[in-house]
Length: 237
Image 1 (cartoon, rainbow, N blue to C red):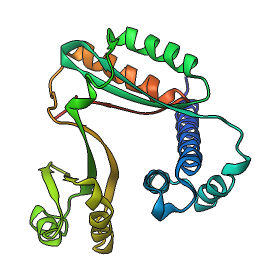
Image 2 (cartoon, rainbow, N blue to C red):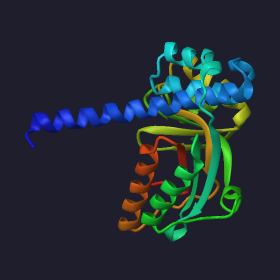
Image 3 (cartoon, rainbow, N blue to C red):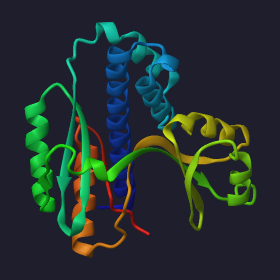
Image 4 (cartoon, rainbow, N blue to C red):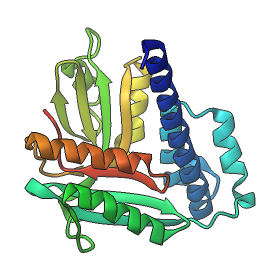
């Protein structure tokens, strides 16, 4: 394939992935409104959904349309959560938002089979995870571990992980938005920020073949319109 066609193909693929992500984010906003109402500050699920949508460049106009248009939305969505065990001690949690539970179950079993993973009993995997606020800051001369600690002395920081080009900050969910606002007010560059399930004990090494299959599994979940997110206990160092 000529280079210009290759670039066009890659660009088109990125655009398709972005469009699919926006579709998932919009669906989560509508579902959150139906459950807890349209007031963002009074609906934690909606607040998290809007926050994530803004991070991923979904326009304010689209967000407002999905919040205000929930009454016209006839789609009957069901939130489902699956737990699974994979090879080499991999623990997996998958969340879906769908109008067709049978389709989700069938597709997910197919993805898991390719990984040689199996569905587990409810809460057999989840009790190894904990809901935490997770913020990744881009490290530079102004964003240092000392500065972060200085700014967040009055907040509940669970842990810091300093890496070559970033600092990961783990916080109590109730303190997440306060700490995020502190970072924004100090012009820290936030690479990623969300409240999510995080494994209490992570695995950092996998055989290359299994690592490849795990990534393929995650890619399949990301590409599936019914699956909202997937978390695992694997973290590459």
